[in-house]
Length: 388
Image 1 (cartoon, helix red, strand yellow):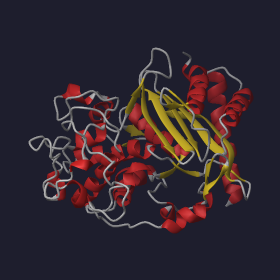
Image 2 (cartoon, rainbow, N blue to C red; image 1 turned 60 degrees about the vertical axis):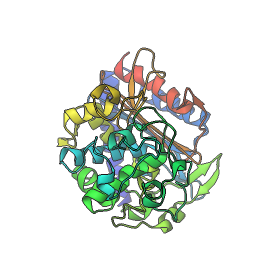
Image 3 (tube, helix red, strand yellow; image 1 turned 180 degrees about the vertical axis):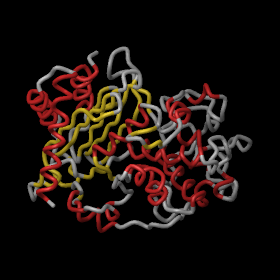
């Protein structure tokens, strides 16, 4: 098994090197050295950076350790927990369900839960999936979202009337990032499929691309490649503990409102493939995940689409718009930060450029909201690959 993986990695290097040196004209050894220097400067324990261009992965570099105690290096096989980038990936599944008619972006979410959910201050304004995915829903995580004992009904139903779980402005009218709102999207997916989010995403997104990704470490097929998590250089949580956490692989919309906040484990190359689909027309490797229209809708400023969002937001549908990283360019994607680890996916549809960075522990210092390590890597690699 090990010998086969070494052969596969060598073949990948042979495939990567010519496309880079001939098409972009830069030295692979020097590029790897500079990428490693950025990871060191960013105090990364372990990480991967993957670049795709015009629908193909053209560069990948793995750095450091997935487990420092055993000195296990990060490889193409390493699974990373990608924190809030989970939302971006989950958005693919939600949009697939919308294409199938199981979800409607502007439907009152009360219809999915079977009871009335209202912001008590704005009872005539429905809460919608479009609002949840654009972080304009007015659902707040300040009123008990972290409690494992509460249900969606306990926190949001009209009957309970908890104003503390809502912001003071009307749903759809203003941006406020909400992990609770993002978690509700997963609960709604379970309500309409009667599958766990993990099972639904495996069926709709991961299996068609032969990917092994999961919303819990215990569900991954090759647990020996799960990265332990580090914070400020010290162990935060070992891979073995993540595996022991387990997962309720059933549909329970009332209780499963945290899964899609940041629980996804995935390999860096597989994450890049999903980003290729979102950067392009919704397809990758000959597999169509979404229609071009759905992909475009995810990128758009939602208030311009005439739906249930009327206020400004830097997010489309679980997709962040960023114009502060590369001068004169708008990038799309998402960032994830949690307990010392960071993950970043950003892409430029105009030049068909995709950037993916995953770490299991690094400096989370930010500039204008985006991790400096990711910005440094992106600014270095973009002109080498895209030539601008």
